[in-house]
Image 1 (cartoon, protein in one colour):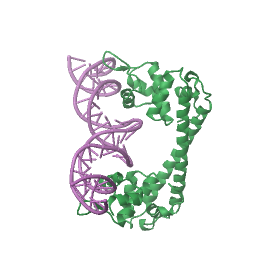
Image 2 (cartoon, each protein chain N blue to C red):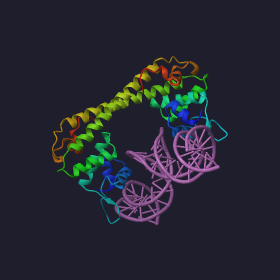
Image 3 (cartoon, chains in turn blue, green, red, orange):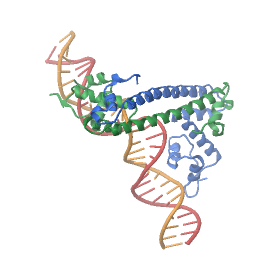
Length: 136
Length: 136
DNA sequence: GCTTGACCCCGTAGTTGCTACAGGGTGCAT
DNA sequence: ATGCACCCTGTAGCAACTACGGGGTCAAGC
């Protein structure tokens, strides 16, 4: 298939596919006589793996390691487990941070009664960190 | 005070302070005879406002609008409220997304029993989106 | 008086993960 | 032959910094 078809099949921007090839995440495919990229099922599966991993929030470098493991199926999978576990920890930490943020924002907004900026609780709260309840 | 002192006082990288000045978020301060930047309390307060807003996740452009309101205290504060409310919605959406992610990751990792990559559930789950329970 | 070190200056390039051109070629239908 | 959709390459842009190279300034210590 040509790049446009692969793009539609995987929900990936064409520019992104070429970008992945450039940084060595996807192998360079064969070319047609007209120098068009020509992909097969293996390419599609690999790109799906990449997209799925990226959607789950893994960095490009993490995806590279995971692909590497996937390419060498006799290797121990400790590393995949380690990468995923560390990522899960990061996601959990991010959720905790954002929850504090959400509470702080809700508290700030809740105090605003409209009117002019001089009396605005949002502006005031931003000016003075000491009004905060959480560390952020 | 000089830039290093302001940096320590606000917990802001020196390069970041110069960057904020370059993009017009902070006013250019006076200079000493040796051409060193010289800051006063007003600068420190403004930078604290910026840092606090950035810590709360507002974009630079949002901070610009909020600073503008803060500089013009007779204006209506509807806009500050609108910016903060929209931002709160975005934070809540992000938390919801990350929570789905966390569940999916936990589910994937929970299935891994160690061993070689050929049998690794993490790799398998990444290869095949159909194993997922959530849309992401 | 001269060096050492901490601090400051500027301008530019790098980071992550794409996305968007500009300026061209290809392939098929009308 | 001419329109149109599709493809190619290479480079530049985005956010929000961060790092670097190559210099100037200033007080302290020998």
